[in-house]
Length: 358
Image: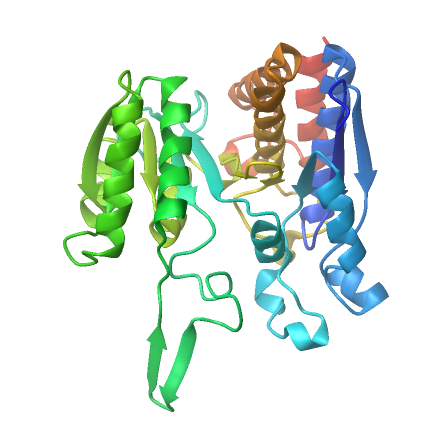
C-alpha cells in the first residue's frame, strides 16, 4: 500500500447508481485536490452492466483488483434481480462483504437544519451493525444457504452467532464511542435468544471493561425501536447483531428525514467499502432526480476509515470537510427535492464541490 495516496475502485452499480456515483467522484476529486490526498480512482463495472458484457455480475479478476486497492466505492445494486448464482447473478454487495470480511457496517444518522424530519427532537447517532453472520442465509454458511425447506410448507432458517464476530463488532463500537460522547447502547433479544444474544452481550461487557471512559447500557431490540421514536436524542453509538442493525439503521435514517441522508461504510481489518444505505431506485434512474448525499457521505466515511489506519490528519480533515459541505448544502436548500431542495443530482454534487473548493 502506498501510504502517501489512496487507490479506490469505483463501481457505479445499477439504476441510479451511475448518477450518484458521478456526483460522488466529483466530490472525491475536489477533496483530493484540496487536501493533497493523491486519490487514484480506478473505474470498473459490476451488476447488470457486467452481467450483460461478461455473463456474471462480479468477475473473479475484479475481486483481485479490489483486494489490491485501499478501498471500494460501490454504487447501489439491484440485488433483488440477482437470485441465481449459477447464471452469473451474484449479489455484489453480499459478495464483497463476505470475501473482504467487512464485519462492521457503520451507519451514522443525524438530523439536519433545514430538512423536515419525523423525529420528535434533533439527534446524532451511529448504528454499528455486525455484518457477516446472524440470520443472513447468504453469508453465514461455508457451503449452501442456511434456509431449508423441510416440507413444501415448512421452512427452517438458522442464525449463526460466533464469539469472535461478537467481540470484534463490540470493540469497533467502543472505539467509535471513544471518539464521540462515550456512550454505547448494546441492543439484543437475549430474553428469547438466550444463547446467541447472551454471547453477544458477554462480549459487549468484556469490551466495556477495556474502555473505562465509555459507558454502556443494554436494550431489548423492540424497546430500542420504541425509544428511538420517542427520544432519539438520548442515544449515541448503538451496537447490535446483523438483522437488528439492518432494521434499526433504516429506522434512524428515516427519522433523520430521508434514507438518502444516511451514509454507510462496510469496514474490516484490511479493506473497506463505501455503499449508500438505499437501493438502486430504477423507477427514477436517468432522470437527474436521485439524491447523491448517501453515497457522498459514505465516501467520506471511507476516507475517515483510511485516516484511522494511517493516522493521517489530511484524510481525517477531508472526511470532515465533506460532511460539513453536505450539511451546508442541505441547509441552503442546494439539494434534491426529497430533502427540501430544488436541484437535480448533478447540480447537488456540484453544490458540495463548490463548498470544498471555495
